[in-house]
Image (tube, rainbow, N blue to C red; front, side, top):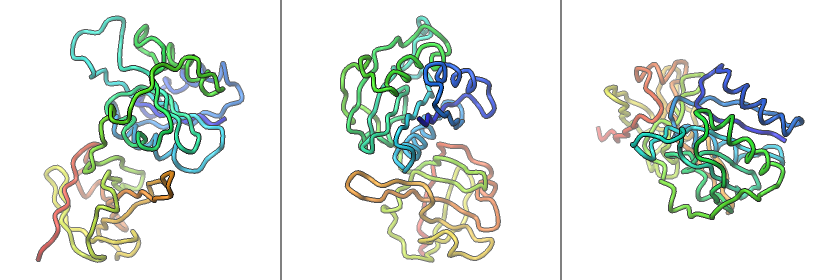
Length: 265
């Protein structure tokens, strides 16, 4: 079994190893792969849950995620209580277990056959993803659904914002939450991009490498998935050929707004 562990512990944080040990104590033959998202970034968490869960991979897969800002209640916490644990069964059979916080489930909510709460404590530890949740995650991974609680509706999960930075990859490409099918520009049309206080010209392209060296492209990127009915979802990306789009925009953060202004000149 492949377990994709998506969490905001921090790159290289020993927390990943601590959680992995708890998972492998029950599932010693599993392979656990780690992905660190920015602190409290439920948007990046949700984006990668969908990207990993809805794309091809081993038949036996679990996406186990934890990004819990504990923002569901502004009052003082009892016993380190936080957002509740949930289960989603995606249309391709992939199981997803993790905290329902912010946008963590926003990208998969319409691609799930089943959504349930999980009957485990919402408190008991500051480090719930190590001390509390692995019992449920490993049971569900093995097909034991006895801890499942009430079903809930996708309508109870917020929609993902469709104008944000979802991720910055290792090349400085900026992955956005702008759906490619919503962009109606003609190829090679100039646009103006604003992120924070930085504005830059760009060229809309239907393929990232169809621009010359040194040109900022606004194009469908490598991220996306196929829905149950065969519809392709792609996300727009900002790509500076021969350079670094993230540097061009003064190193913006995940979740910053991306404004696309058609160039009428």
